[in-house]
Amino acid sequence: MTQARRRLAMRSGVAVVLAGLGASTGLAIERLAAQQTPQQVFRAGTDVVSLSITVATPEGKLIGGLDRALFQVFEDGALQEISFFSSERQPIALSILLDTSASMEPKLAVAQEAASGFARRLGPEDLAQVIGFDSRVEVLQDFTGDAVKLERAIRRTNAGGSTSLHNALYIALSNLKKARLQATDTIIRRQAIVVLSDGEDTSSLMGYDEVLDLAKRSDVIVYAIGLKSAQDLKSHGFSEADFELRTLAEETGGRLFTVDQIPQLGPIYQQIADELTNQYTIGYTSKNPKRDGAWRAIQVRVQQPNAIARTKRGYYGPTMGLR
Image (cartoon, rainbow, N blue to C red; front, side, top):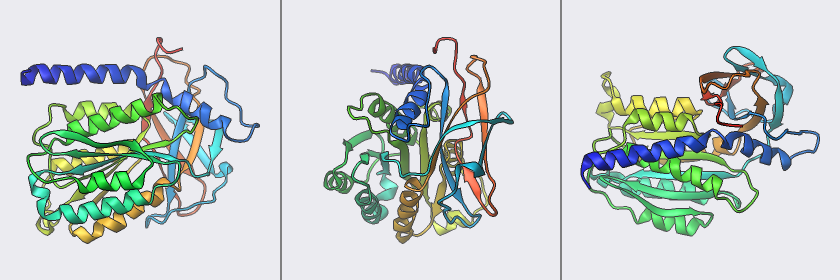
């Protein structure tokens, strides 16, 4: 298959995934609500928006134990009525992405150890998959709750080749979508991607704009860890890799971590794990009756001193085809 035809096939796949993304949000929050107190009722057929919210101090210390009354949700500037709220830990469905390009060779052993420690911290109802990417993308372990299998897959990675970061993100987003649709249990899992990379994309067929659009149409939180040299951090020049990863993280409610020392990876993975297990879940039915598929901006405020709420920046509204 020629490169042009492969690119066309990849983009056709995006269209198929996008077609099904919008309907999953309401279904997920309704199933989650069914597991909570009977007083919180969701009506079938409504367009329910689900938010995973991190609340922290300006210094980054997580704030737990907040009451529902302290939260305000705004959509396109209009205050919304919160119909579902939970501060309980929600199980996780996670894609662990590891850059295995040639430049990672001297760092890979420590990266494997840090990622393995992260996998070992998963809870009993959590699921994770492992994806390695260099010139090509390989799913080394499909979704499982078995930490031994996850660690075995992580340690099986070898460095070599170029960097196809966009392709890896596309595959991770698609796999998370499939995992939600094909779930055989009734557990609702918060979905996230944790990607570790030390450089810019050099070999993907998938463009960044398409990956970003796919992420914005999902309920996946993206956390990115950028490995940099000390010289890179001193430079004030534009970094395309940092820009892409930061934008992707901020749009989905995640974070970009930039480190220049390999031993920092363990604490970073721990910080991400702590954040994922200490988030609030809020659901609301939009007051906007339009079904035009337009982008709707979201802002969450917490009426608590020194508390900053972080969630996805918005979502695409329903269309006439979704009932």
